[in-house]
Image (cartoon, rainbow, N blue to C red):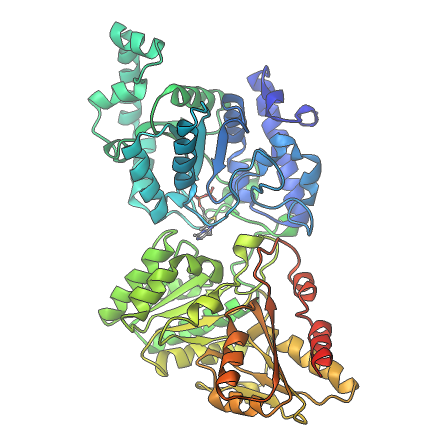
Length: 614
Ligand SMILES: Cc1ncc(C[n+]2csc(CCOP(=O)(O)OP(=O)(O)O)c2C)c(N)n1
């Protein structure tokens, strides 16, 4: 099999296009086989196979820097850069990361998987290469979805201004998680679908080639290209107004055509966009036929990831939101390009005009929500915890400073698992608890989450955040649900130790209490429910124990437990306090339970900490 003979990008040279098409099929099989076992970004990767082959034939990686925005579409890149054997371990604990990873390969430059950053990295690298006179190319691959993020526009603007030598590949499949929300994307699609444009483009290229002066310029590799010539006849496009040349669109599955375009772009001096049209999910029928998100990602077994699992916190949120929508006509829900995985689809179906997808633009979402709240609406932002942290300034100074009643619903808080360091939601509690006037809830059950949503609408007229974890929620009876701004005491112990389990950590805390009971230690157990403000009655009660142990699934320093420690300190409480949580480090991908256990955040670890303190 040809794929086995590819040990690095140099092995792609000298191959016929027929061989390369076969290779693309083999890569697709390898991707599908691996996702079948471990799950992963199916649609995005299947769409980028030919593009990746072409990139590695035209550019000399790692001498030239090939940068992937978001990084979720880099599986073929991994396979072609000597990682085929390890590819079977993708997303396993200790195995290959699902994103580019600098520790894995010199071919991987950037590994953060938050979208829309690549043009900024590209600008920086190109500036440095130029300063060192390094003669290295910089290529930035960005999707139409990632192009909706503010940073992408900032990067583009700066690239056009600086005239840095960067090839931007706009990998346009018309989708982000859902169909991409962007007029830019729409107008690019119009170009694609407009036969007059396509005919005119062909004609212009033909004319350009016939003009001797132009031919000479191109021949001498000077600052002129077919794209530049076309511009003389064509209305300036968005990119060109910013000082970035536009070439395209090209069929992203035709290796020869993409290669030619990249070669031309490489010879061009200054920033240039090569617009390639790709099909998300290409080559795998169920993904091609999924007209919502082309199986953006898939679970092991190649099952499409359901937007929410039955019994999960997300399902609790989704259900409660529809109910609240009925009761409060002013309630609107906002998503940054993820309406399905955040559980908004039922709300959108019921109230189509009240669900707003802003694109991959969390910062804009937060400030826009502030405006909506000022104008009398009740905005709720449904977002993954990790993605909200990029909009912290907007949370603090736009929502917080203006005291607006925006509700933040943070899914996937805590350790999330196979997506690695950038996807764990472990910074949100540290940040949100520093916003004056922000109420922060951490539900420990399906029913608690629903109660907190109701309370968020009624109890306060300031900002509220509710944060929950991925996966199944505990289901509890009515009498096990708290209300309002109070903590819930689950068990009154003998005064030796008080255990406070925030949010999803409550079951582990209860299990630890059971272990301690076997040793004759009768622990008091609290579900604090609120991270801010902390219930003063709970703090007073905890202060009467010899030992207080708090457990959270976020950063230990500056988070929920740190707040408890401060509050006890302010009361001059005579007790020993231990804050259990995630250490300040970048936590790699892995199974959440094992990661928790590794940090002593499981029942055994919590019980061990208590014994040590006692
Ligand atoms: C800041 C941020 N918000 C949300 C996401 C979640 N996310 C991952 S991939 C993706 C869609 C990306 O679309 P596009 O760039 O077009 O790439 P495609 O998957 O279509 O190839 C989204 C919204 C993210 N990675 N970063």
